[in-house]
Each structure stands twice: as C-alpha cells, then as structure tokens.
Length: 632
Image (cartoon, rainbow, N blue to C red):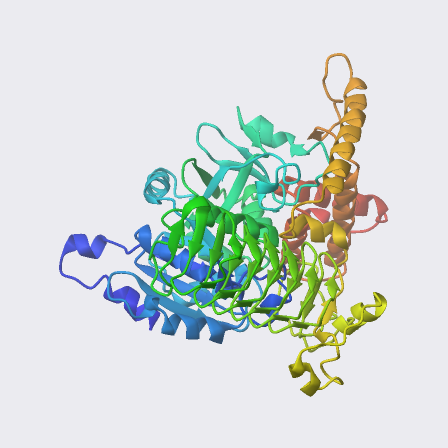
C-alpha cells in the first residue's frame, strides 16, 4: 500500500514532475532499548507524554514543518498501540501533502533489522531523513539537505549527513548534557567529514587512542568532546542496501557509523552538519526526558510549545507570568500555589495549601491538601491525597498515592501503582504492577522482551512499610473492601531491583539532580587522574616524541593491546580451519565478522593472517608438500 503511494507521487506527464522525488522520512517508533523500563513494558516509548503530548507528535510535527511529504513509521514493540494512535490522530486524517504510513514488523530486534525491512519493501525513492520517534527539534533541514545533495553530486560515496550541535563538555559537572554518553568525534574542519566516532567513552579515562593512519591520511582534524549527536540523519538509498549487505550492522552508531569509518575497502563517507541557533535533542533516558521537558516549558523549542496548536490533540493552554501554563478547566484552591515553570492539565483539581513548582501535571488529576510537588512529572488520572511530598519523581497514569506518602528523588511509579499511607519510597526506586523480568539484555536491545519468561523476586510496597516500622492502617473507607491477599495493606506494586551498575547508573540517568556528593567525588577523581596523567606526560622523552614501535597516539591502559592479541588468536584459529578442509569462502566471512566485532581495519586482518600463515609454515614438516601460497 505504501509502495503504491510512493509511485503515485511520480505519476505525471510533466518531465520536471517525473524527475522530482518526494522528500521521505523513516521514523523509528521503537528505541530498541530498555532505559525506560518498567514503563515501556506496558506502553511504547513514543506514546509516553512529554509535557502532556505524546513524543511522536513532536517528531511528526517537525517532519511536516521541514517539508517531508511521506513519513514511514516503523513499529515493532507494542506496534498495535502505535497504529491505533496514528489511526485516531490527525496525522492520518488531515488532507495535504504530508502522509504518514505505519510499517509493522514483529521480527526486528534492532534498528538495523528495521532498515532491512524498509529496504525489502522498496518504499524509499531517494534521499531520506532517518529519525527516531523520541526526537524533538525546530531546526530547518533546507541547508543540511542542500549540502548533502551537493556532496552527492561530487562524490557518490558520501552516503550520510549527521546533524550535530554544540554541547557543554562534561555530562556530570554540567547537567544539561542530557545524561547521554560522552561522545568523542574527529571531524575534518574543511570538508566536515566525520573521521572518528566514539559514543561509549570512559568518563575516568583521560586519553584516547587513534590510529596513526588516520593522522597520516588527514592533514588536519579537530577532536571534539563538546558535540551532541542529535540522531537526525540525511541518508542516501545506499544506506539501506549497506544494512542489507551487512547483517552484523545492528546499532546505528556503534555498528553502522563506526563500521563505515574503519572500512577502507568500500570507501563510503559520513559528513556532519552543525546547527547553532536551532534546537534538536533526543530523549535517551529519564534525565534527558527531564531536561527536554524543561526546555519545552522554557520555550527553547518554539513553536513546539504547549500554548501553540502545532498538532490537534492538545487542549488550549494559557501562558501566564513566570512560565506557568494552565488549561482552561483547572480547579485550583485559593490557597494553593503554582510556582514558576509549571504546567497544569485540563480537569485537574488542586487542594488547599498545596504547592507545585517546576512540575508538569497531566489531565484529570486530583491533588489533595498540603501536597508538595517539586520538579516532578504527574501524568493523567493520578490521585494524590493529603500531605504527600513528591520531589523529582515521575508518576504514570492511574497511580494512587494515599495520605502522607513521600517520594524521594528519582522515584518512578509505573501505571496504576498504589502506595499506602505514610509510605516513604526510597530514592531511585522503580515500582510497577509487573514483576521485574529476570533476563536483562546487556546490549540494551529488545525493548519488548518477554517479561513472562522469568521474573526477579521483587519486594512489594508492603515490605517497605514493614521494614520501616510504619503503621500502614488506612483511614479511607475504600480500603476496607480491598483484597489484602492481593493488594496488601500498604498498596499495589513490585519494587524493581537496581541493575548491574547499581545506583551508579541510576543517579546518572535519573530525573533527579545529581547529588552534590557525587559531583564532589567526580571532581576529586578527575583531579587525581589529572595528576597521574601529568606524571605520565613528564615521563616522555624531552622531544615529546613517542617510541618508534608505538602503534597509536596517546596512551591507554593496555585494553587495546589485549583486544589486538585476542583478535590475532581468533584469526589464527579461523585460519587453522582452512588447513583442516573448511571452505575458504566461509572462513573469509568469519574473519570479516571478527574484524567488525573487534573494530579492526583491513590492514589488521592482513597482518594477523600473514602471521598465522608464517607460523603454520614454520611448524609444518620440511618434507610437506602443502602450499600456503594458494591460501592467501
């Protein structure tokens, strides 16, 4: 169906119309990650509310504003929910040049698989915009598109243009870095070609390792750790075929981008386009969710702001002084206070002496008396009884907090969780009606992984009351009719245990501000590492030159040498299978896979293979008639 629509746009007798290719976009409605669990076990990430509007609406509104005519929304996890939402939304009903077509797949477990499905459908006619459904931007694509097309005319190997922007250099000391991984890029200052990309840099490591061949082949390059990847890419159709030809390309950055940068055989190139005055960011985790929400309320994303009707499902918001947004039908007590940079949704009631500051409240919420809400996100149909205190927490639809509940910083309450009276939920806790899956994906893939395959024995909210010796007996008459065998006298929900990184990752990626003691630890660690680094620098020769047998610039901790040694052993073992009679073509595929998995170059493969051949030749008897030359 989508393919017919694409061909219909080219059906004309006018030669100029026939030569014109509509601007298309591929929107990935699945992040293929687990960072928003437990929430995304029940609802897809792109449908989660961002300042009371689904994330995908921001992305589709931006695509329409930049002139995209056909947007293909790739759905995988909770695909039916995404399709149902799109069918009911204005995007599928509005007349005009902007059309939205869902594409569903249940077999894709990565972005690479998604692009392979798109390629097989044959819906892409020319250059297209690749973006995820959790991207918020107000940039114009005109300049970036023009640069991309001009490069393509001069160099057909220029297959991608990545949009980047300036960012502050440290994700810890500057909390506006969105909590993402520290990204390191090497860019040619003249051509803007991307030469090196690393999105998993170690915060404690003060040196990087670059191949000398990169420096030898490039007269000048600029190293940046102050650039933010916006995850907005302008791609040529060859990108889809490259994913189809390389099934080990799964992740867009760690596999595809880095794979192309080290591939000397094909010679494909990636370029960058930096924006300066526009806004573009991706919601990668809870900290970036918090940061982008604040940016929207403070109007950095204009016209993507709550009081502008850029898509039809938003209720009319009124902007007051101090950045306070209120829907028309809000029942606010005279003694209740709504402070700066807050948003209150339609149908919400706020009781006496309650204080809301720097927070977003959804629709049809009931907030009792003497409630304090600071830096938090309350979604729709939430009931918060008297004397509750919420600080930098996220509360999903249908949650019920009984009187006296305290949510410490970083708490996540998933859908329809109930918390009993005077219960204190510890910082960074995640509570859900669904038990925690026992199988976690180390590669952060499979957002929709089966939660029923096994569960972790998670404590219930009742256990918190017992361990803290709090009397949880409710005064509400509704509690008398509840089934205590299922609900418990304290509430409903499982408390998820922390991941392998423990609270180390929780506080980094939480919506709560980074604790002062953690910032102090980081600063002290950085100062100590800098002292050690200076000692290493002082141990260099007076000329400052590296030793002649050094294979890299800078210093490392030996991990690169260990990876190189492991790579050589793997190549040698693979080569031995040729001597045992295995088809050489299969062995070549294995060696190419090893090259990509160890992030090695073709020269590394040739060197390791030559070493294996010579080693086998030395170990073979002199009377042997085996010819190693035929195996090269």
